Length: 334
Image (tube, rainbow, N blue to C red):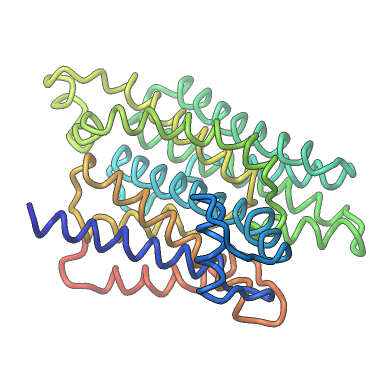
């Protein structure tokens, strides 16, 4: 237990150092001593000399961005862990039921119609929820096959249809004004996140995570065949529906805030399982911690490694895909 607790403390310490790096790094660099002074002034009201420019950069620009990275990364990783356990498939990611494609189509439609960013985000959120509602409706109508298989195949089909809609709007969009905005949004990023955006989206993100935390012990039983889980007192269909809705809510809120960011919900749960094992009561907090840290680190790299800011989805793919291949190549991987 002491060793296990030490590993958690080490992970929390690494996350704290990563957050300090995220606050200090960037085109406007804040040296560690000045960052610590600004933190002392902000948190404890210390009477220290901190320039207004540093305070503006830290608290009005970087703080919403870092908090958004923590929340979105945690939400995507937790949703991915829940989906992988629920569908008994380690290759499942949060967009398996079409939520990312639905959110993408909603956002692209908003950009194509020239709507403000608040409307674009609302359309993305609604599009993600409607896509999964359509998948659930199709699955409810098809009862001749395994319900999990029908749910996944319906998600693939609906996602492909919505992806075609996105491609059509990209063709119709103005190549000089609308198309760059659509492309950048589809690649994901935290550069446009404001405190107001975060305040509007955070309740939906947290509302999606709460059921996963409350039901974390029951999720383990979904790894069993349905008849065995039912024999242990679990209402499998109802539990699966609640988990799908919760994970969808968190994923749709995340995508509406940052655009489509891949690989977090696929790779991070694997890393969490390597760290704490498959028991969901331990897997969920590990996924939350690692997902938030991973996305903050990826965002910091996206804005520091090149003269221009790279799309966040590009960075997560460049980091996540090779790591996932390494996980697959490991002897005895799950």
